[in-house]
Length: 154
Image (cartoon, one colour):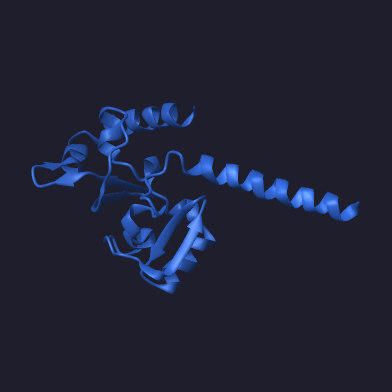
């Protein structure tokens, strides 16, 4: 009887964790393999002010997203306090979130670190949204936060 109880409890906890993981990734900008920020090292944005591709051997899964890091040091820094490194707006384009409230893919090389916030942007040959963000960042940031809250409260 006790074995059945523990077995049932185990399967229930796995089921709940699976549901929790799925709901956490709903609004994250992940590719088909659940890789965030196209595999770029989140810590490098803050500590080096550079977009550095991560390596597969320094992978860490956090809340359903797979994050890659350029070094073991960066991986360990992220593990200690992941919330300090996660990009704003789930890793979607900050400009688009502020302008229209849409989830738009990003170019991981187009970014701004402002204090403890990492903003990522869409960038193409004729459309650098980072530049547009800089031209009215205060207004766009406020709108982006409002739009993000609406999107994620469903």
